[in-house]
Length: 181
Image (tube, rainbow, N blue to C red):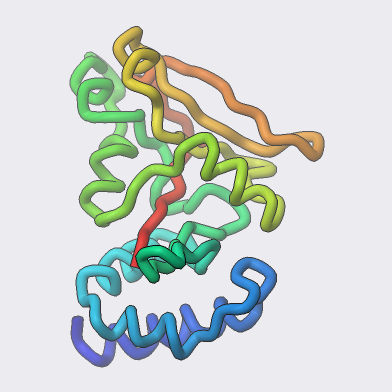
């Protein structure tokens, strides 16, 4: 990544980090910055998260590995990642009105993971997300084998988990990514 792309990204990440200290209490930007400087791949993933409207921020830290956990913290599901079905199999199963792609493949291309239901619920402890949109979450293989996929949102002050056919897609449904750095 060239300096003219990297520097504004790092400034944006630092600003968001400092404005939202409640998401990562006790952690300092300088420690995270060292890890970011050592990983061009992570910066590429964060740039993709940022460019698609995800507003990535640190939501955790693994003391055993030293990794920081980034997640999309945009108020609503990232606008540049909506109208996607769940995975490639679902995309290929559509005969008409195919979406542009799928959440699982888009996440892989960005170098991030889809949030699990548990990670989604943990994110909701840090703020209120997806009050008008919804986000696909990683779906257990047994449920996916039956043709379904899971998505979550927040309504009425609670987090809800729903199911839908994996081939479905909606303008208000996207996905949130998780990245370990």
